[in-house]
View 1 (cartoon, rainbow, N blue to C red):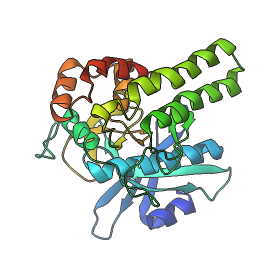
View 2 (view 1 turned 30 degrees about the horizontal axis):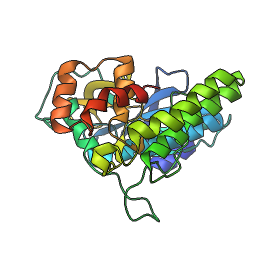
View 3 (view 1 turned 180 degrees about the vertical axis):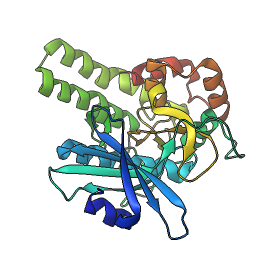
View 4 (view 1 turned 45 degrees about the horizontal axis):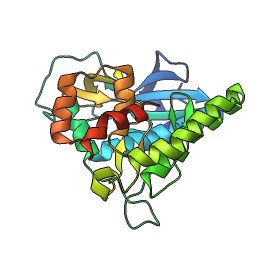
Length: 295
């Protein structure tokens, strides 16, 4: 049976709604929700469930990440409808999104007509929304997001170099020290990278000839396992889609670190992508920047 909290969040009729288990992951269990309306038509949702505060943080981050991406390129990812705490014990949390059918291969309509490279380029050339209290876009995100099981702090910062050094490199170091204990050599290497290499490659006075860069929404965990081709929601169109995001308002090239580290995006993909989303200046330091983003 569907948990009452999910029924309320989606305004479902329990008598005409059902749930069927799907495969899960190390972080969550999943299911398909099917509800039938008065005219006999069916609507499907994808449900994630997980225990504890880690799941609560992860699902809130994914909820806002999906909708940040969807707001810019609606055909790129499922829409998220709700997240919250389940009512029935044991303590668990949930996330509900559009159901996406990755088994659908044959196109049945025109759809968006955009390739994955074109969609990603559109996402990466659209300025991020301006957070409340600011007069222009800044780097960060409204909430903590999770890359795998690693929580990423996203406190807003006006400097990209500061955000990447503090909220990514040094934040990961602190998590590693809490989990594995302190390592003086590792700390020295990370601190040297954050204090010396990051300003040299990512400083506002360096990027785009001193103009700095405009924050954009990135997926944040884009590798071959988080992309596919299929139908989203009630659409009959087969689209290139992404899922399981860990978004932030960041430098567009930051996306390429994980993409290149794990592979799955060939030279033709990047050629099409960069024709629409050019490399930042100085172009001669592009490979160095992407290498830094792999850390």
